Length: 306
Ligand code: SF4
Ligand code: SF4
Image (cartoon, rainbow, N blue to C red; front, side, top):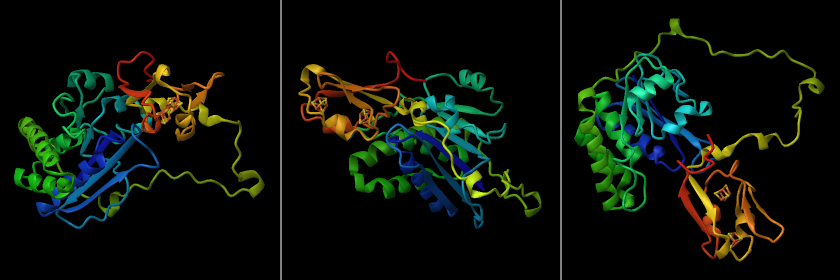
């Protein structure tokens, strides 16, 4: 069985990417599971998706803990422990990173023993319609690395999944996927299937047995107030909202609509963004009636949170 895990940020098209890869495996006669995992998160939050593919019935369920291939479409996630990118990665796991740094840099930085490959983020960033193509490029690469998916199956899967978005998106996605497929040709079939574990080798989960306690003792107890403030959700941001106060009419709509309540109003009624906690969902930008809010890429900006 192939066990493939994608890591991305919300908005990078990873849910669709896992669906395309799963469909391509299915078209090649595989049993498939493909599933994204994310909560009520928005653009920029770390999310993951996974694909299992096997010629036999798949009885395994849940998160893939021992992946054969890990795909990362945003290299900043590699340095974010909460994203869990390196969970279960061993010397037989292939790691594919969309990055503009060299694979040697990542191998050294992360002390990895296995094969690390990269595709350039410059190669496929956005379609003309503004939709991200990195996800679909990674699918093309994954298809080649697994060595089990032909170009025709990949093409059919992209058509099937992206047709509703229109001809231009389909064509641009095909181009991005096929370019990555060709780029990975020297590494074809380097991702290998791992057999299903036998019942004998079953490892029980690392349960922690909690002794039963009187409800007055074991009921939830919060030891301090306002602890969510300590979680710097600003690290999720890929685009930074910036307010031009000269265009602001102090309507306070951004302050009202920000789902995280991170836009406060100063003494004169002008909005101020708390960048430590702004997740970059850009709802404020959409709501601003005077177009006073712009979005700039977070990477490389002064005060970038890491
Ligand atoms: S400030 Fe804007 S971009 Fe940041 S969390 Fe609030 S609405 Fe989203
Ligand atoms: S929504 Fe726009 S105009 Fe209104 S307060 Fe916010 S930045 Fe100013």
